[in-house]
Image 1: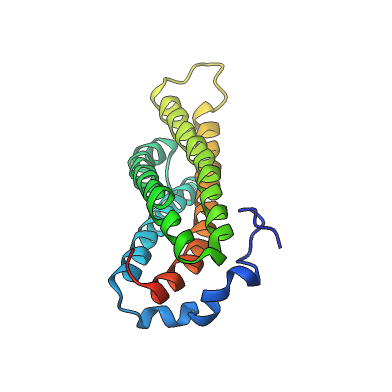
Image 2: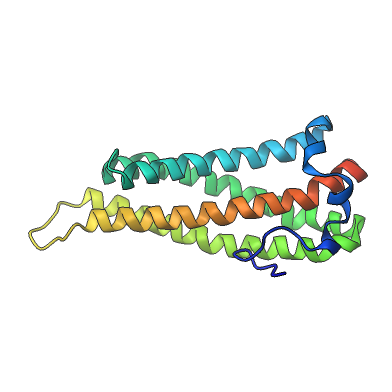
Amino acid sequence: MSLDLDQRCGWPAELRLLLDRHPRASWPARHAADVQFWLEIHDHFRHDCIALETLGSDYSEGRRSGQDLAVLAAPRLRRMVSNLHGHHQVEDFHYFPAFRTAESRLASGFDVLEHDHGELQKNVAAAVMAIRELRSAVERPATPGDRDSAGLAARQYVGAAGALCRRLIRHLSDEEDLVIPLLIERGDY
């Protein structure tokens, strides 16, 4: 089983130790504040991804212009990226080290998640670059030799945002499968 973010389809058995004891179906019954907080934060990222992907689909299907896409997607992407950066910093420097200490059998999983953060940063950079190029393209007057640079920039942005969201959603799910059962077993961090 590959632990690469693009190939991963859940965790191998050795990292499912706590998840097997505390499967996802049991999580809603848990009223622990730390569990609910973690899931709410991740749900915000999922909501942002859905919104970004909907904007991309609206553009691709002709319901929005490139100008609309640039205007609507830029602030949402900026906010998501800022929140994601802060979230990953707290995880990398506080939570993951504490989790490794609390449950050393899951340490390699936290290493994978930390590596994901670096991989996701590449997607963030690509999406941010693409939205900047889109904004620039829609603000610039078209020239006679221009063969739809705004359309090309919009399509590149849609692809970059889609890749970011696809990988982020996979990461969030895998992170929850390690973290939430640990929080259920061990309590506050």
